[in-house]
Image (cartoon, rainbow, N blue to C red; front, side, top):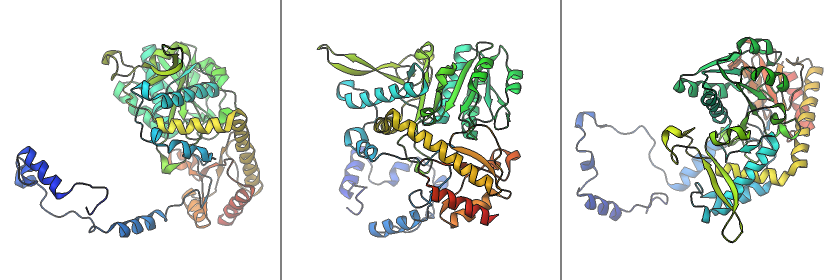
Length: 447
């Protein structure tokens, strides 16, 4: 065989053709008129040997600016955090690595327990009563939360803060279009949700209010004030939250959130050029039977031994289509396991210490930039991200930083025209004082 990943021999091919009663591959397409068939040659390079191909692909991959060789100050929803070594060791085990989903509980106890622990830790972090076995990512988790709210309240209007991640808002708009729901975006004021604008839009037709905590600009929203507005007319209060930040911040459940959802990427999941990641979804008990996806529960078998099972499955694959609350057909079990292992390895104290390091290092970077003439846009409390005025094109600044071995921040002008020339900088626990000082120096030289 010439290709180790294409183990079909010529004999295999002839045997299959014979089994279906044709002599050549072309006969399989005989029903397609000649004039609509592709007759040319594909515009691809000639095949290479495996060593040649590996060398070429390695050379291409080496052109990427990765976080192992570059100091990254890029966040905006995906962060460069510490991943305990044990995470990769556990998720690389074959019983986890190859498991798709735990349909047979009697042979999936390890995976079911891992998911159960994930649910438990998410509840502890968010202050909510119940969490599901995970979602695809943070954006779809929030969109599913809004769909749950619309179905529960039977209202058609969704209010979402413009300080929520722009891509999450895009996903929400896509979901809402299919359900014929109206999405109204509430402007931000000084980097946080404009409460006056929010209150002006509130009414009996509102299904939910969606905010982010910390928000897209890194600012800490005033959840206590937003909750009062959100619950004026029995709408639901939905909070998108960075779970690592909840190691230091008061959890949304303490502020009366009905649903807390988001992305578990900060715990044990590398950036991976944008995915795959893992969404989480937690609610109060009142919405337990409307949670999308699945819930793993703990029970005992006939001998009284502790065991785990899929307790609730509210998707159309398991129940009548008209009773389903979502068409979520899978979960990110492997990434949820990675998050579980990371949270377990860190423990409560470790998670808090890392969260505090994010806050203190981001504060140091902010002060150094301000001292060197770079205005910071918003004055309120923030977690590990803040907005800085570069005074020139962020694209130009980032290109220059890259030449110095630094991955710069997010260009806010891409989604917020009023914040052109403003950069969203993320400073995690992995950034050293030397790296922060180098960033400040290089930005000063670029200016």
